[in-house]
Length: 143
Image 1 (tube, rainbow, N blue to C red):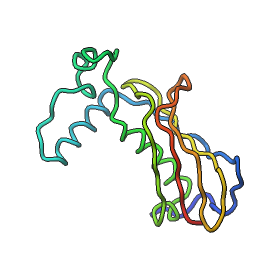
Image 2 (cartoon, helix red, strand yellow; image 1 turned 90 degrees about the vertical axis):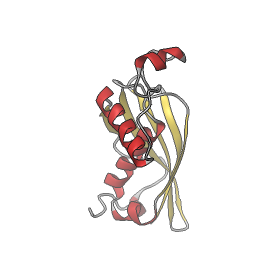
Image 3 (cartoon, rainbow, N blue to C red; image 1 turned 120 degrees about the vertical axis):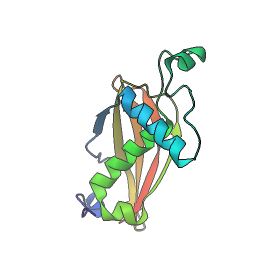
């Protein structure tokens, strides 16, 4: 396990972590769906995440990623920034507000709201390369 790269106690309101940028491929979206099916002990089914025809049938112009991929990018940003303090007691809560399409760039962000009472609270969000927010929420960890 990595040690903390940023001392959470050193952050002030308004401080931002260096954003994490990822380009999401169709293959990654498909692999995520395959893994999800295997973990739930069910067959892989055609759906809006892995089938262009299914996506178009519901008004999407191409397959969209599972919202959990945006969550995983936020988790990676926080894990890389804080290490052990994130592993030991981090909490992440998000809402999905717009789809992440296979092929898009995803950018994970975090901004300190307030460090107090031994907890650090951050606004977190993912957005695509055009700045459209995909997932928004809060993260908390002990300092």
